[in-house]
Length: 236
Ligand code: ADP
Ligand code: MG
Image (cartoon, rainbow, N blue to C red; front, top):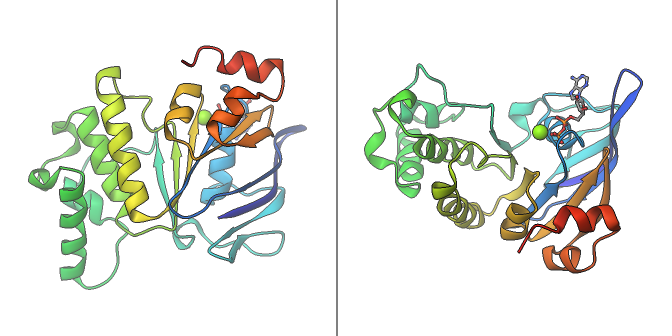
């Protein structure tokens, strides 16, 4: 996925300014920055639920958004895992994962089963979301997001609702599955430690701009400025 000079203004205020990023298949790029710096807005622009004032987005060499054209969200080959993008409460686990899949019924059923087995939720096909723990819901949400084989996966603080005891395990399992599926992953977080753990590349964001990009340890060892250094200071 290639993003070029993405800009979004609300009223007179520029919330996302000239953001350029590229994410390769099988790689995790972390968009890291403090609360309010424009991370979620950036993801919403990429997902297509909001429209940029300027800039372009392409997936697999195909332009999905620029000044003249705009591909609808469901046709962008982009999967979403957002904190506030919960499972459908009125659908059982299997139907949640099948949602948005198209094709012959037998193939859909096979894909749903394979994804649920892969996240260790194979026995819960008939369960409803409210019968599951937070961690289990998270696994189902991951299966649902990856079921259509998206080329790009956008994740907005997907682990922040989980308690510490579960978080590391689910984080590592999620990472393994994402790499296996070969999606290009853009993961948003405000926690430097999470970015250090998950990212192949970190893009450090502040006040709507990318201030530094690089491999986690390069950024950690050579932060752009004092503010970036302070931001990383509690990682060990
Ligand atoms: P982050 O995800 O990094 O915490 P956001 O992208 O959610 O930050 O928000 C960045 C800034 O843009 C915030 O100041 C927020 O209030 C503002 N903002 C986001 N969406 C809107 C909107 N629809 N209208 C006006 N301001 C918005
Ligand atoms: Mg946010």
